[in-house]
Image (cartoon, rainbow, N blue to C red; front, top):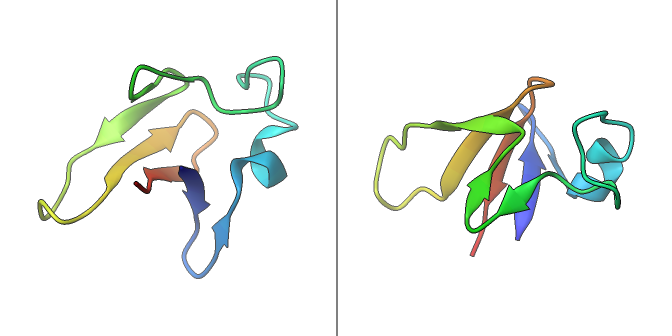
Length: 65
């Protein structure tokens, strides 16, 4: 499950990506085969952290499994 992280809050992508020009047709991040196509991967500090990405709009997205 993808979530949007800010300094002190967690949002569902539907709350943020709906207005993004880079989102797919349903207003979701462009997520395919375990990779975010509208952002870039951020290096994990520890192996226990979920995969994180920074989208083109500057938000941090985490893949919580």
